[in-house]
Image 1 (cartoon, helix red, strand yellow):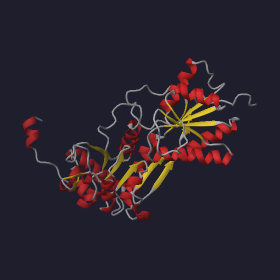
Image 2: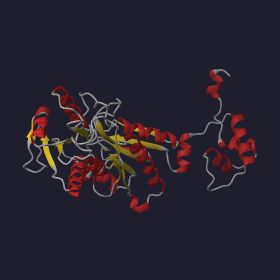
Image 3: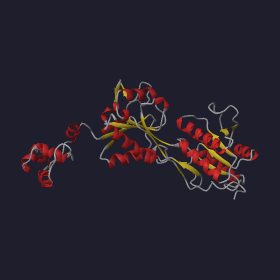
Image 4: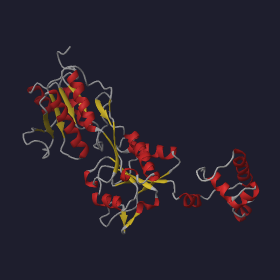
Length: 367
């Protein structure tokens, strides 16, 4: 067929298919949309409709299908970060990968919202007082930084969305999926205690947000349970959110010196990158890891920019990022199917894993 004839050919409609298959338009619609909840169609009739579709080269109108079903089958992804994570080394990359894979598995398109910005040039959900996410049936919010006022407004207006990570600023009426960092940190302390470590030191950074607080709470809780002193030092810069008596150490050498003076046999670092640097410094200074000192990282929380990725040899807590992304999509779809379920909100924490690194071992002299 010539391009001119193809361009001028009348579009085949569901009515044409219905006439060719000798069925009603309702039957054709049921077959095309893959639904059987409103009209039961026998296998013979379905085969006849499919044959007519093939013979007439019928192509469903996606927009019409969406209108008929009340949904576009589009899942949105929005982040307040400056850019979506395109590099595999980015902390948020695996979250987005999990979202994309689950969206495809469930027959949904994934739409990345990148253009909406406020007067300050920052990414915004509400552009000129309009919710730009409305194009999608519902959305997943990815990234550490959020605008709490926008999130609360989004929840108040009833737009279906799920956040990756728990954020206090968003309020309680928000669905989220997050890693269970508190339990993961407790597991690390439990494992160290099992290996005979009684003097454990935690290195805290200068930042404080929900996931960091959960790590510190998990550490304190596990130490209390085992009757251990919750030793803590701030790294590189003072942290106003930890006890005032917390020493502030300038670099890894000072951490190693302090650990030796205090008889510390295991160090837990909030950042896997800091754990990696401490491991390298220990090797340079001839400190045996894990023979004399065990080192564990509590997972990377977005500090990979312009630095090397953590050494695979370092024992670290691994965030189930890909699973969190996929779980967020399933949670969103549950909300779309049953908006009134439990008030429309759902909270879920997923278990983290401890990697099989080489920096975790028994305390010196422990058998």
